[in-house]
Image (cartoon, rainbow, N blue to C red; front, side):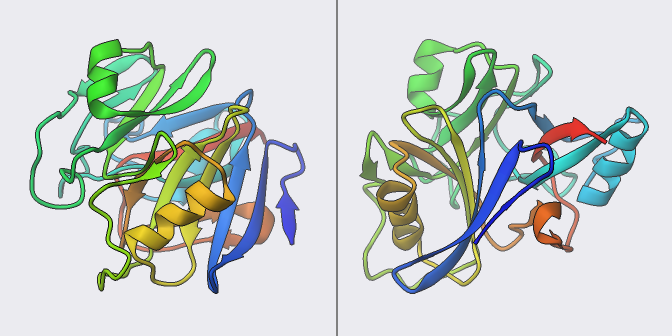
Length: 232
């Protein structure tokens, strides 16, 4: 089944791949896709409801939102973060413990010509102009191939969310509705969503706001959040 918001900015659907259920929300590159972190008082939004309240004062609302990258305890992004053209945390290129530092990792960049997922070292070499950008890791799909460190028989399973961009420029956000391995999640982006580049956003805190589905996942306060904004 496919749900679309009334403005047609986002369509969400349930997808079952290899007996695993997912929710996939797809966004046209022409839509108003943004990243959010702090409110007007420099306090992290943390929750979808807080963002929507702030947007309501501008006559706007969220058509869709999802957590968008890893963060420290004070909600500061772990890697590169750019909002409205302003960089607040720098690009991290070194390997480090945990999922973020499982190289290659990558950057989700939203610019005037659309959105793209770029492997971190390629990003550092090109330095594309991003109006919004968030760094996370690991990459799920790199030039059509799964991350080389993913194991078919891995035992680590979690609720996971990520983003990929297909050959037409359409942006696909996915969240697993059951616990999955990295290899399984990567196969969704490679084999079903046909995204040659895809990026893992996070795991246990993964949440989706999809009003057209009457879904807005509660939970702990988040750091970076990605969302599509439409007139209220």
